Image (cartoon, rainbow, N blue to C red; front, top):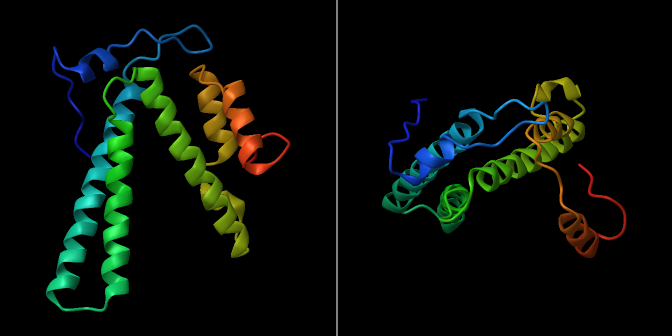
Length: 161
């Protein structure tokens, strides 16, 4: 994947040159923010691919379920890009959103691996504990409000993978 280049004077340049500090006192550097922009680039390309597949199905006069699946997939991939690029976010907020997406994906991956009876090691580094560890290292912590919101929606107890 090509490297995202932040040009001086653009909001991305400010975010890449952030002054955030890790839990160990060292600077974040540009990696977490660049990773968000690469995630957006991947989501945008995925949305375009799904849209192209949907167009092929429409052109071939295929039944609606396939077209609907491709359309929904394109919209979901595009909405991820939009959500991550929402104007006015700070570097910290953007990185936190990406980590939330990764954590949710890791949770779903773990459930799928368990359902088919495979070795949990198949998940590699994309595990809930691994991503939560990265969040702690970046000093991104779950807020009390998020935990309260979780309890309101899903019942008592703490949020789990």
